[in-house]
Image (cartoon, rainbow, N blue to C red; front, side, top):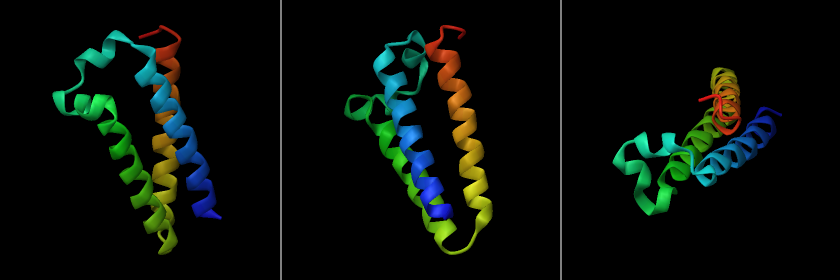
Length: 88
């Protein structure tokens, strides 16, 4: 069940991440140079490995990683809302 929840949270995180990348927000110009690799897609690769690691740890019975990824997703959601709504 935890893996399914993490997978669904991962889909949401990828969608939010892509929305921010496509928004053209000026804040994107302030990120370090390595996030611009592969046309900005390097950060999506990092996002994938965060999800993969969390899913692997949850599969081994470590519920803390699932809770950590859920908290990470909540912080991402607030950040995306702030960026896309123009509050930042």
